[in-house]
Amino acid sequence: MEFNSLDAQREACEAFVASQKAEGWLLVGDRYDDGGFSGANLERPALKRLLADIEARRIDVVVVYKIDRLSRSLMDFAKLVEVFDRTGITFVSVTQSFNTTTSMGRLTLNILLSFAQFEREVIGERIRDKFAASRRKGMWMGGWAPLGYDVKDRKLVVNRAEAATVRMVFQRFAKIGSATKLARALIGEGVTNKRGKQLDKGDLYKLLNNRVYVGEAVHKGTGYPGEHEAIIDRRLWDKVHAILGESPRKRAARSRAQTPALLKGLLFGPDGYAMTPTHTRRRGRLYRYYVSSRILKHGARPGQALRIPAGEIELAVVSQLRALLRAPEIIVRTWRMARKSIPDLTEAEVRKALDKFEPLWDELFPGEQTRIIHLLVDRVDVVQGGAGANIRIRTDGLVSLFGELHTSCPVREAA
Image 1: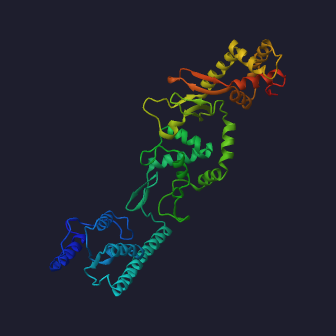
Image 2 (image 1 turned 90 degrees about the vertical axis):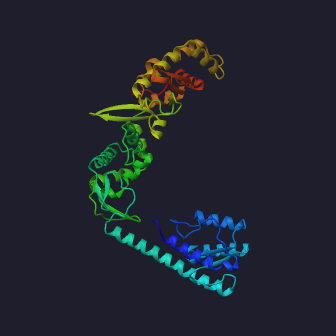
Image 3 (image 1 turned 120 degrees about the vertical axis):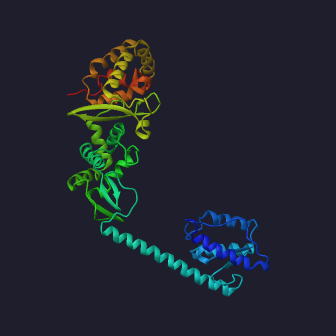
């Protein structure tokens, strides 16, 4: 605005200062106007500059239009008065005549400030009461519109394209039962929120717990029938929240049992980040992948591979492992380590025991295969471009495997 209330107040203050010219009063060059900042606290840039200039002894008198222009908090004003007293500042209100250097002036000031603070608190209570009453009527009270809705005429209106995305998320979570896996899949598919940000696990939980999608207006944890149209029906909502109510550890354990990951915790991408197992179903078939944790957290860079097929990388690792167990240098290394506990052990006995691994592997349950891999492998690094993998073997694991095979109480076989 060309001329607002701050300008009017300053004109009145300038006129007052001009009337005190005989006393030697002169305006300082700076303006200490805090337009757009509440007088309820001291966190205002112009007020901080004023206090700094007072401490630097550049000011002798502080002139305000009304005392609540300086502060509407009794506690804050008491702090300011202490600063004024300590630095010898005279405080003057143009429309409320008093002198802060006398006890009566201080009393008058405190009474006026008490009423100013009371007025501020009453206004706050009225706003809160109006907000609560509006929510009870199901009205939208502003803020960011959630995914699936737009705001028109201060009401939530369904955005059909976004609503389809919200329904898809609820339906897939009800089927998968894992927010972690669903978040990975959604990131891989490029699904975003209303502001173009990829839906991570935290965003997914917020979406699944937002009761606006079942047509409710929520205030302080209590839901009221909303004016807007629901996107999710109550049956699907209840199904999703029955899953969310279950322990995350139980859900994770069940999910892992359904989709075993041979290299979980061992596989690392070319960027050095761990690769996390995930899966998807298409036309009734299960497709397993390993995805870089960097991509899950920060999204994919242009040209960066999103995922590696789990079957291919696991087969490559097992094939390399089988070849390593037949390699003479591995046999000799295992023999030297094992002789520390079995002094009369021969190299031929070690070779014979490790040879049992080849036919035994395919007879093992998936859980036992995973145990053996974690026993033998310390780390697997995928080569740039996914053209292969480098395996770091655990020597103590080789000795442990030899011990199981050598004593004829080998790794537990399938019945």
